[in-house]
Image (cartoon, rainbow, N blue to C red):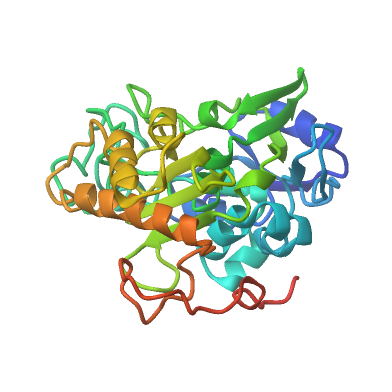
Length: 363
């Protein structure tokens, strides 16, 4: 790890001033540090200064003026998942968070930091291999190498990495907004514009400015989806593994059982959480049948292309979408706890209730 300076900001203004002072090199905010410190240890990230932002009062979770919910950027993932209003009104958020990482990491990781975590592509972490995301212009080792966990959608000739977050997939499905501040003012970024596809600049993961700080994530009103939502995560081992494919799905059904609204987003398949509104539109006005779910899966995966080793992810993603929509229809919150059942079983969900799926103590 390279030498760096460390300071603690007591106010948002202090933090913004520190972030804007990058004359000698990159200045980064740090809260939980669950990804940034790993990147620094591997010599992937090389900030000259870290600014502790834990004491800025940005950990509150409260109703928004528009009737939704504001998630403080510094609120821990574990506290967010267990928050009564999140669990009651946005069970999809709780389920996605509980599907990610370990209890210890969820106790440390913040909501804002989760949005900024970087790909877990092994070529990105290995400074001895070429990686356009780490060093633009050097090439992409994954394209000609091992690409089992890499993108099937939205990739470019420069990069085929995937975004690792579970939380972000649920946020994308619900159409969240990211609130940020800098010394130049405030702005709100729609979630579908926050993360980027790689294009010709794979080193840029988000549209966040170098001197901007995430202050909150706003969830719009979505009570109509609470009863029929699920987070399905398909991974190579049951504990602490990133998704091969994940699906956040939610349905709003009218009194006759017809789909009135739908939300659908995929993780593990692209450089950002993957949401295609046209796939949701396929479901609106239809009966929630396997045939309708198949049609939605076809639409959301249109244009999917394998990179050799990951060809299996295309049919896997198709089946995962169909399965997730079926779970949402049945009101199954997530596949967390299905440790003894295959992911595409027709057996009923008998896992622990949501309030017993994450029992770690808050720090």
